[in-house]
Length: 183
Image 1 (cartoon, helix red, strand yellow):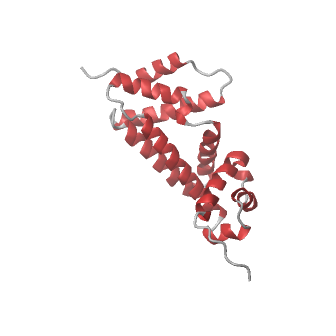
Image 2 (spheres, one colour):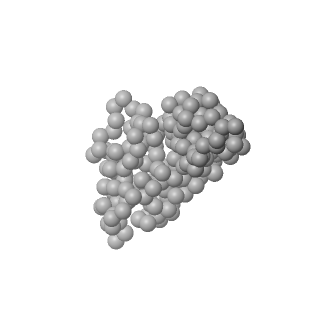
Image 3 (cartoon, one colour):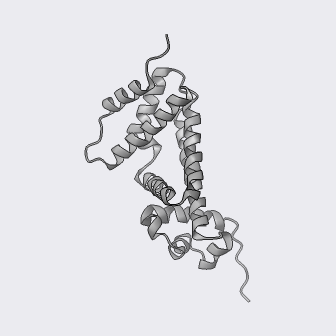
């Protein structure tokens, strides 16, 4: 009998591999075999640690959303004034919200999957609530919802466009959305 390999990080490695496979192949192309190969684990490890491929994908999306939320929140550390908030939101959009094309590929895969799998909407809803709670440190809840949607939309436009919106225009859009400071 072969000795059992001690591998306490196996489940996390599988989740991380699932994130990478989703980024490379999309949800539709993600399989148990591709994830097992990427994680360098036997195929049976996936069924041992996860109830289904849907369960594994949900855990991968949840982890990705948590990581992105931490980057997002950190972006606003030190912001104290309305002007700093406008600049921080502008920089966030202009800099792809602290994410790269790989991160956005996973996010867009999550959004598309959540349209078809309502169980994933818990992941997207939690991610949106977390983002809005960061924004609500600076603006009211209604404005936070609009700014959150603006960030998502402009980043998507920037990511998919062949001629991105210049930073100055992004700043003007953000300032108009946030509105004038109260008198």
